[in-house]
Length: 334
Image 1 (cartoon, rainbow, N blue to C red):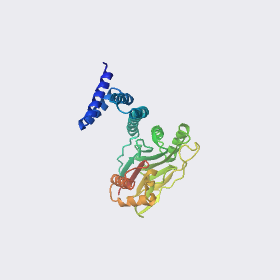
Image 2: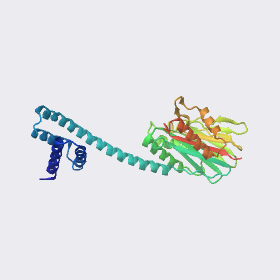
Image 3: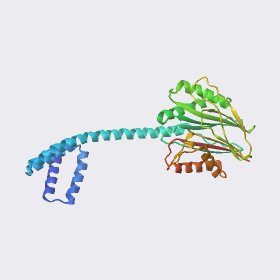
Image 4: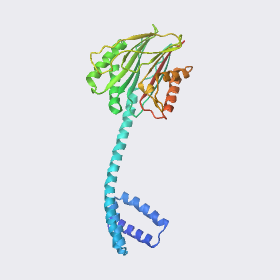
């Protein structure tokens, strides 16, 4: 008697014993047999065939016996669907594992430390809505007292957006250290995007350059969400308005550099549209609402300020981000 025949005999004995004397132990034996049959690849239809034979030998009505033909067909279909389901689960698990590796690699590739610049207090938070982020931020120090700040947002989601963002990062790294004019940076990146990125994918970006000696913030925008400039003396917020097409639309586009003089207590606030487009029960968050949250945590250091704003806006969305969230605050220290 081979192993399968032995299992069949075991099942027959178990069923007959239960028919003679039903008990909780008998049902438990059935559960154990179920696990054993899966381990040894005994199909549901084989078990039903054995069950049918047992009932025939026990003299059960022919109508009842015939009903097992229907059950057999149902279980065969169920078995095929179950196998397909398990196969899909296995592929999904494999894909999830690969995405985790890719997300970790992206974090490593795009990681940008917060520089220590004399006279500035910097705070940054960037949180992806999914595993892969379509937001990007970067700090660039040129060694001459100038600090470059980039914030970009891919109009798209998932792996294609993440790969595109990695390309932007390496394109920025290839720009000469002495060519950090905001307009020049965007024009250079625009050529790279236009030549290498799918025509249906666009990138918004704002690039700013703080000149420590001149105490001036220069910036240019490629269709990016306008940031804020806070003028401490007036206690007023102003939009960092700048004209410029999204990267990748037209390779001949020219960008314009704008300027803001920074004095003690002034702030520059840059962000992705994941901040202003937080979805609440009342609709999207307005820019005035963002200013409200900035004022709420005005008194805190820059890093604590951005952390508190993120927590508040995350709570507004029931702790489920709908879009990637990036917020940078630069305070001119007194």
